[in-house]
Amino acid sequence: MTESTAAAEATSLDRADELASFRDRFRLPLAPDGRPAVYLCGNSLGPMPADAEARVLEQLERWRTLAVRGHHAEPGAWLHYHEQFAAPLGRLVGAAPGEVVAMNTLTVNLNLLLVSFYRPTATRHKILIEHGAFPSDRYAVLSQLQFHGRSATGSLVEVAPRPGEDLLRTEDLVAAIEREREALALVLLPGVQYRTGQVLDVAALTRAARAAGAVAGWDLAHSIGNVPVGLHDAGADFAVWCHYKYVCAGPGAAAGAFVHERHAHDRSLPRFAGWWGHDAATRFAMGPDFVPMPGAEGWQQSNPPVLALAPLVSSLALFESAGLPRLRAKSLALTAFARRQLEARLAGRVEIVTPASDADRGCQLSLRIRSGAAAGRVVFARLMAAGVIGDWREPDVIRLAPAPLFNRFAEVEQAVAALDAALAPP
Ligand SMILES: Cc1ncc(COP(=O)(O)O)c(C=O)c1O
Image (cartoon, rainbow, N blue to C red):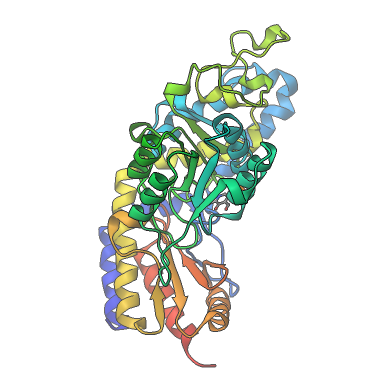
């Protein structure tokens, strides 16, 4: 595929793209030379929805004009602010509204849910994760083990890709779960692996964990807004995620959590409690004893961080109007186009780490420069200087994630052309 035929194909794909107009509902950053950047970093920090500024300003205005009365003044009382997110978030992760809550940040939610769901006994105390898990997840798991007087040596099981391979195999994860079944308390896995972009089989792995008598927990940081997930039907016990990546709700946006409805009324689950998790009907009676709300809201700690949630109103409206099935279809087409071009134009120079099959990948393509990590760093710096914004993950991966809400096929073509140029000797 030459550059000009690729560009012509991109133009015709963009013309046929029924989601093309959503790009205008974002503010996209500029390249160092002042031209629009090719922003392929929505897997790290989604760009700003154009409407987000107005939503934040609206809340600042409420604060300025109403002050404390903003908690109760309708429409839009802060008292209920978090409630509007449960239904649209539920649609993104395959959950009923009562199973989902927007609160805190990802790692805080992970620790809170591990407090409830990791309940080791003398015989059942192991936690299974992937080797190479996102560091924050591993730190949280290690700290929970320590909290219960346990150590990684005795209680942490890490499953790695096979030697010489980058990707996890479902059969290896299932085999490890079955091997550990007598001692396994909890399995914590990512819906999409952050370094490789590999999609894990939430349904199969949840089934295996639960069949082994373990709790199934998921980190959906790279899944939500990227690939369809069916947490409820899969029977997952809990899940956590952030909203600043594909969901485009801004840096440090308040995060999300899922607790399966079979736990909704289980008051025997220990938890770290706060007043916003207390039954809303009697929260302001200011009683001394904690009575949890049924469902995921029962894990809330504090009153909703309105300014950290306001952009989520804008971004979820975009997801609601585009619809996840259409976004997924465009995402698969964008990534397939990228793969075709990479294979045609950069074969032998760039390795695509991300799986090829549709079921096993989302928006992200993880690339490795064949001449090594040092060369990879140089290529990545050149890409950024050329206005193609992706990110670098140690030890040797360039991540590029065309996102269907705001990226064009033409940008994928530009990124591949820029990569081609960046690979040229100086
Ligand atoms: C897979 C994964 N888990 C956890 C985190 C940590 O998120 P936070 O800093 O919002 O707690 C991230 C952040 O990028 C992530 O990618």
